[in-house]
Length: 115
Image (cartoon, rainbow, N blue to C red; front, side, top):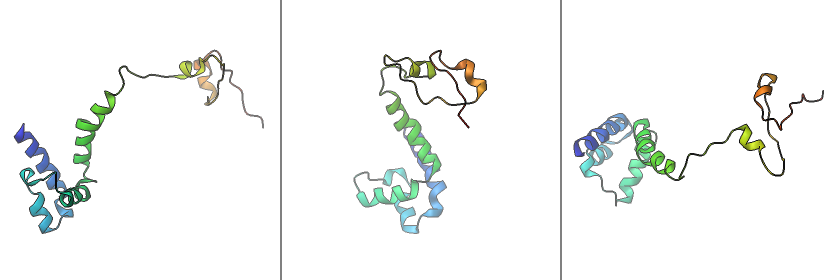
């Protein structure tokens, strides 16, 4: 709710206060003062909060990742077996040490480089 939003913003403000002038602090000290329509204020907020890890993590966790992870109707998974299973029989790009040889798809034969 409102109290949680104000508390979260207060954490951002406190962490970034040292990067702000007195005028900017007066503009940004309370969430209620933020005008999302003001381009100059948004530019100040971007400069001040762009490297504030608490603000960045909030937006990643609450906005970006939930939106991006809902883009696909099902979980996307691929491993070496999926990549090697194709109608053309094209297999490329596998590398590693000999200890992984038993884990490679059956279509893949491990060979040591010449030299």
